[in-house]
Amino acid sequence: MHKALILFLVAVCLSSFAALVWFGEIADDAPLAHQGLSLLIFAATSLALWKIPKSRRPQTQQMPQTKPVPQSRPVRPSSDDTFDIDKFDDAIEAMSGTADRAKQLPGWALVLRSPYDDDDRPATSWLGGQPMAPATFDWPRDSQNRPLHFLAQIDLAALKPEPETGARAPGLPSQGALLVFFSQTHAVRVLTGDSKLWVPISPPSDLPDVSDLGFWGTGTGFQHWPVDPVAFLDHDGGRPPTIQDPFARPKDWITTWGFAAYEADFVVQEIMLAQFHETQFAKWLDGVKDVDALPEHKRQEILHHQLIFAESKPLVEDITAFRDIARKHDPVTPVAPDALEAIFAARHALTAKMAENRPPPQCAEWRAPICS
Image (cartoon, rainbow, N blue to C red; front, side, top):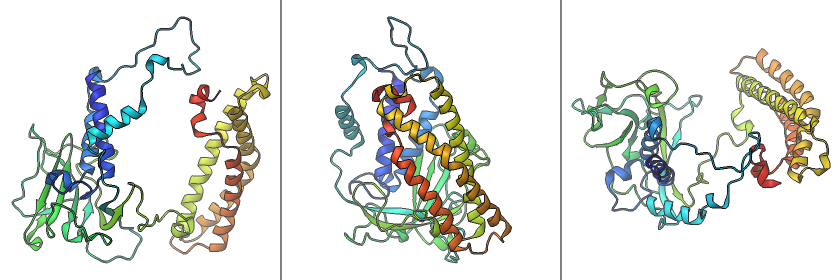
């Protein structure tokens, strides 16, 4: 197997592991660097993949063909190309160390503070910005003496015991700070001592721009964003039930006319994009001689696009009118709940109709042959 492909599989393995085991979600006897912040593994391995020279990346190989195959249709893999997905998953789990992972583990989610909340508490944990450390702090570098980028500082005193089990982050002191750095590799530093003596640490002069790592934006650092660690008991790696999704219901976050105008404008653009795809689909449909001979998922797709064409236009007009009204108000004043409820009722009505004729996800255009 190509070395680059092996590196890719290992990176996916480590990334999945990192997503599952945030703070302390590994065995008590694991090394401290691994217990600190598994997010670093995700960042480092992803960036390592990004840096693979093109000459070493896996190259697409054309399968031998006995006759020309139209390029507009995907080619089914032959039986020789198949593999046992269960064995593959087992191998990944064995490599990542998650095969014998406990069914429930204590974890600490980093909840972003909203810039619109009146929260005057001083931030003791944050993403981006600058680290706070003793003046003699030695900025981490990689094996080639290149400085790493600062990612996060976590107040260890804020990692409260998990309520159900009383567990703390294993291997970490109850006071101090955890500093996280990354680039092609990663580094974790644990600070102890009197935090009142710590000072902002400026990055080294030879720290490269974040764009060199593949991130959007300029500068050598990331935006400072306060966070609050919240303890929870992780059962399946999903969103903790005790941590609500602030965007689950529109009325929970579309609270001002400014938010309402912005969201409405975004929805209008998305619907117009869907209308464009509808016209492209209609051109394809014009060339179909026998619609009844199409597979079921294609006939569902036809109904889906016809519905968008028939009912999305008046909805766009309604949302556009709502957006224009929102723009006339002071953006920071509260939105009218009745107006918001009315426009969302119309949107939900169309969404419900679309769900009735939406083709199965596995039968998307590029995978259509597997659903024939």
